[in-house]
View 1 (cartoon, one colour):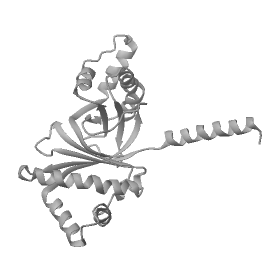
View 2: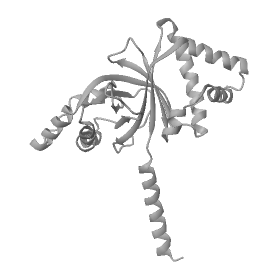
View 3: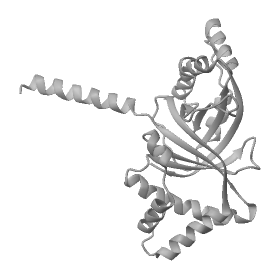
View 4: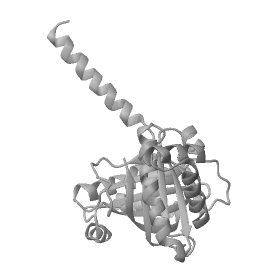
Length: 265
C-alpha cells in the first residue's frame, strides 16, 4: 500500500469514527427523589455509596454515566430534594435499568468487605428512607458542541416543557434551529457550559404534564447569572420573530435549578 493510500485510509477511518460518535444517541432516566428531613444524613451516605456502585456499572458497560443533583429551587421542592440521572446508550437498556440483584452485585464488588447480609440490609435501609415521586425516560435530540467538564459543584437548570397541541414538530424545530444556535453562541462567549434538548421517550397522551426537557449547564453561579443577562443585540427582526414563535409553541411547565454533588463518567 502506498503512503498516499495509507493517509487516505486513515483520514477515512477518522471521519467514520467521528460519524459514529455523532450518531450515538443518549437515553436518560431522571429520578426525582424525596427524603424525609430526619433521614437526610442517612441518604447522603447512601448516595455516596451509590457513586461507587454506578462506577462499577459503568466499568461493566451497563450504563454510560450517572449524576446526582441537589435541588436548589423549583416548583416541587416539597415533593423532592434530589434529581438522579442515569445515562444509557439505547432505549432497551434504559427501560431495563439496573435491577436490585445487579445493584447488589456491584455493591459487593465496590465493597468486598461487606457480606451478603450486610449488602441486603444496606439496600433495605435505602428503600426505607427514599421515595421517587416522579421518573422521566428521555431521549436526547440535539446538544451543543462544547468540552464542558461535569464535576461536583457545577449548576444545571432543568426546564420541563410541554409542546402545545398541534405544535409538537414546530416546537422541536424551533429548539433545534432557533434556540440551539443561541445557546451555542452563549457557550462561545463563555456564558454557558452546555445545552441539550430531550424528548420524552415513552408514548404520551394529551394529558401528559411534559413532553420535552432542556438541560442548561453552568460552571458556577457567576456564569449562570451572566447567562440570564445575555441579550443578542445583533438579532434581526426575522430572528426575533422566530424566537417568539418558538416560545409560543410550548408551555414552560417547571424550572429546576440544581447543583451537581456526585458524578460518574
